Every structure is written in C-alpha cells, then in structure tokens.
Length: 491
Image 1 (cartoon, rainbow, N blue to C red):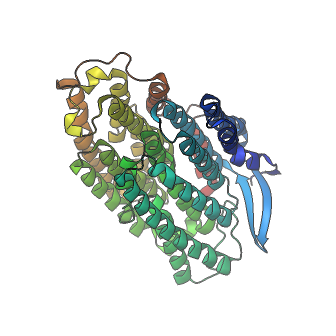
Image 2: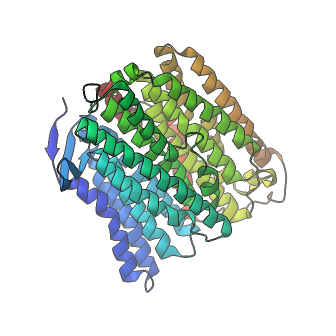
Image 3: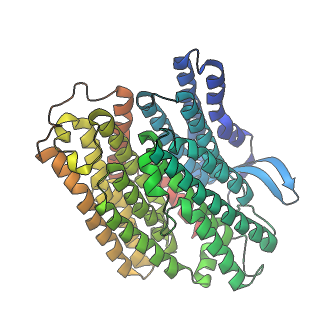
C-alpha cells in the first residue's frame, strides 16, 4: 500500500513553464536574449522541481493536490505517483534539450514558438500528474491545441496542410475520449486514479466494458499513432521544425501511450483485461502497426518522413509490451517509452542539423555527410543502431525485455515481429549510414565548426543516453529502477 501525502508542489511544477510567458510579455521584443533566458529558465525550473522527487517515486509515495471541484465527483486534481514521475522527468529533460537546440535553430516568429513550447510543456506535465481521467482529458486537449502552432511554425503550405490534418485527427480523438470519460463516470461512479481497477464487472456488463475500452483505445490511439489512426504523423513531423519534431516523436506520441497505460493500469486493471479477452486483438493491431509502419518507412525518400513512419512502428512496441499482460512485457513496453524517446529525439535533432547545414533532406543525397558532420552523424548512427536493436544500445534492452515477455505470456510467436522489425529497421537506416561514411558526394568537405554549440550539444547528450540506457541499465536513477516499481505495483 503506497503512502499518500498532500502538497501544492504538483501545481507549482505544472505551471512553472508559464514563467516563459512572463519573459515573452516583458522582453520578447525589446530584449530577446533576456526573454530566451526565461524560456530556458522556466524549463530548468520545472526539471529542477521534479528531480528531488525521485526518491519518493522510487518508494511509491503518492503526492496529491486537489485544485477545484467542477461538479460533484468530478474535479481537477493532481497526483504524482511513480508512473507520472517517470513520464514527467523524461519529458521535462527532453524538453530542456529541445529548447536549447531551438536557440540555434529557430530564427523567425521566436516569441510565438517559445510561448507555445512552454505551454505545451506545462500541459504535458498536467497530463503526467493528473489524478483522474477528467484532469487528464482537460490537459490532454490543451496539449493537443498548443501543438498545432508548433507544427505550422514555418507557415508553408505543407505546414498548414499538416496542421489542419493534425487538428482534424486531434479534435475527433478528443471527442471520442470524452465519450469514454462520460461512460466511465456513469457506470463506475469515479474517474480517480488509484493504482488499481476502478471500473469492474460489478459496475457494468462485459459488453459495456468492452465498448468503453474500445472507445479509449480509439481516442488515445490517435496520438499513439496506432494504424490506421496514424494519418497525421507522416505529415506533421516533416512540416514541423526539427526540435518540435523531436518532441512530437519523443514526447507527444508517448502522451497518447500514457493515456493507454492509465486506462490499462488505473481503469481496467491487468486481471480484468485478461477476462475481457482484449489482449490478442491488441497484440495483432500492434504487430500490424510495427511491420507496416516499417515497410512504409522504407519507401520514403524524405529523411524526416522516413523517421516519422519509423516512429509509427516503434511506438507500437509500447502497445505490444503492455498487452502481453506479463510483467516482463510491461517492463519492455515501459522502458521503450524512454528508450525510443532518446533514440528518436537524437535522430530528429540530427536531421535538423543535416538540413540546416547542408540544405538536403533527401536520403539519396546524403553521401559524404559523415565527413562533413562527423559528430552529428556519429550520434545519428548510434541512435539508428539502437532502433535496430544492436546490443549495448537502448533499443536492444527494449527488444530483450519484450522477447522475454512474449515467452512469459506464452506467446513466443510474437518474437518474430521483433525480429522482422529489426530487419526492416536495418533496411531503411543502414543505407543512410553507408552513404554518409562510404560514399563521396558534394557534402564531402568538412564544416568547421560543424554547427552551433546550442544545436550540437543536445544531440550529443541524447545520443550518449542511447548508449547509457543500453549499457548501464540497472544503475539507480535510470528508467529501469522506476519501471520496476511501476510493474511490481501492477502485477
């Protein structure tokens, strides 16, 4: 039984990024450097407030704070539990690196960009620290709306079309999630997250529970880019600026997965999901997404679009792991949240440097990039090898845990999905690496300096974490220790 404490800290953390808005209002035009210091500082503040909570999260201590009651039984409240802390520390750290990267990358409409970046961080933290499904829904929708300006930032025709498509998908998904929230409250009488099932067969029939489950999977599946709900992803990622693309793939897609995790752990519970018989259908959906998403990635010549389809495939590793309904499967799925976030953030930030410095985004025109941008391509190669599941990388740990989970769940045949996925990853990543290092092209002359330090340092940090998470897996402070606590509480 976890200990519970009451504190206003969750509220402070969620709204800490709003300090960036104060900086923009006061100095956005007159003193842009000072305003940028506020943008970075607000993210540092949020991260600094979250970090000291690691010990409490590891001990399973839950910190709650009620904000306002909307109607009887429905409130906006915050809850920092181990799962929420895991997501919050990950997203705030990546957000800080993406913000620093943006300092050298974003040159137009800066105030608007950084303000919506800060608001998006605030609302993502609100999702992570939600104490109930109503609060999660509110902040989830606010996050969705604030992502739109990041996608259309360049204001090209491509960006506007991608933004419109994103809005159609997001608004439709929000309506679906709201229907699930209403039905959950009507039948279960509560929307609170308690760490165990709050909607059971004592509240509603099996058919009703299956309807509610399906509604939630459809709604959250849009952000988690489960096929065929993924349509916005291949357009939004290439259109958005590179740091925004890194956050879209590294964080925003995971917020959709986070919603699914809350539904599994806090609404239905693992035991009841076994009774409902939803495991096998969802495993097939995840497997289909993994394989077909990878096949689509092979056909793409635009670097960022190839990475976008790769994200479609890789996020479903989380879904696959969760619906094995086995401890090791859940370990693999939850570890993939962090592992994929660092791998894909590295790849998108590297693509930003490549496009920024060479002007090329066609994968057939990247010959000699390894000579021109050695550190960038080194980080790109490490992340790409991680996506393939090469040992000593974060991606290997994910696939190892998922493979063990398949055996543990008595479904060893799904290991074939992991092997095929690794092969397909090699098919669309190795040609890029080969061309960068073993082919000479117009990009053959090395740039000195390679790029701006504010862009290169975040890439090297995320790339280093791909190795750190693959080699020093069980070191305290890394995701494994937190994920172990989460899984132990659920199974």
